[in-house]
Image (cartoon, rainbow, N blue to C red; front, side, top):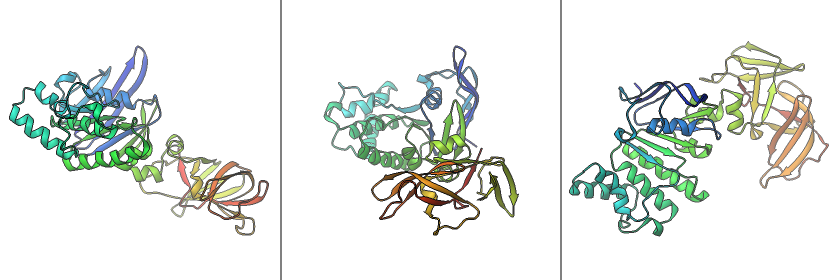
Length: 353
């Protein structure tokens, strides 16, 4: 049974629906990320869970209890903001202790829990410092400690790493995952950074215009997007629209302009009736006409643009089915205008809705 459930929830500003009949289940102890472009509804979903917004319709259930109308101050949730939201006039110790003091916790218990939590986030010895004396990563750790010290039923993150530089973001996402797993706390994490979400999550929900386009394990979504939107969002840049689709010996046979392509069925992949194929630039093979003979899953074309990427060259290849982008490591690049052939490996051709 899910710890957290949003059941047919709708959120609207006037008559403009941000979420409509929205459903989401999160298992106890899991970290789920809400990922998508600006305006997709991910932050609205988080604010709804936190209690900052009220649902127009539907229910929010937590551990079997209806939280739909529970005010934010009655929800025992930890919230980590994008801006840290630390009190500049309070020390690290007092920032972390703030929520406990509001709850009238005894001084002895506050001291024990604050010091224990500072140990968890590796900030022992920083108790007397003020936020202005800390680095961005240290301030974020204080914010996490403050959210966790109240022993919340749920931990919520709203793009917590967007203000940090690239190297620090990598280090902090490892720390967030370590702390979350160490404490076993159920967590909802919002970000627009797919690498960040994929690296720390048990499950990822890809959102678009207020709906979840795909929900699954990061590796499954990365390899087998279910829809064209998800495929484009996670880096698939090559697409073929097929005329027909038939099942053949456990594979999918597809046809476009007299050409035949074979795609593999992937376990759990939801595109049951799709007629569009998606491919990453790294998953396509490019070679000379002599190196790659004509046949199924192959396209003749001509190099349109050649770009040096450092370790490899990237080519835009013009074909009868459109332009395709493909990467290849090689010493001497193909010339613009050179005739080449593309191979789409059947296991790399993903059929999407």
